[in-house]
Image 1: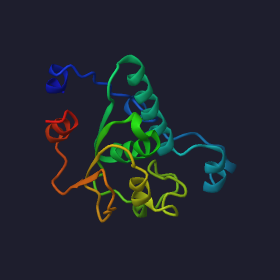
Image 2: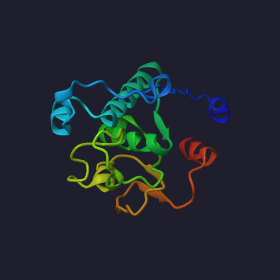
Image 3: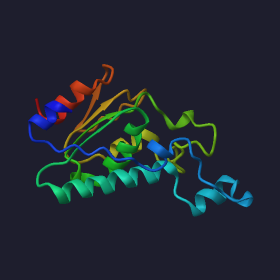
Image 4: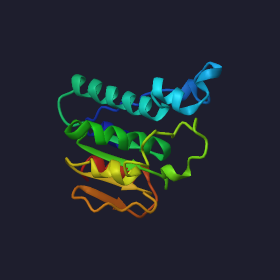
Length: 171
């Protein structure tokens, strides 16, 4: 972080939906809402809420500072970052995302915070990566996903914050 600050970068670290102080809190539902299709028919999935919070953070950063906005996200946050990247287009200039080997096939509990209804139907991580059509996207730990797409660079090395930050800053 210090290297980025020394180069004049602004760092924003959001506390997204049901993380930080609210980590482990499960959304309250009435008994009739326990049926997943009913719940997701009326409520956004936590993963979608987290991606929305990242998009709001990107909009905040763009409003506060002229210049490019980059995104660095680790582990499960890398998946939220991928969803945000797919939706943001050129608003996120260079994301560096650690997907930590996640795949939507892993989800067994319909109320898992990584559940995104329809994600597997529309290609899972491959489908999301195919939407990253502008700029460059660096991806660590994509598991078996390998979408040949210009601008998506897969890194087989373990995610490393120093290396990820250096790539964001172009060095």
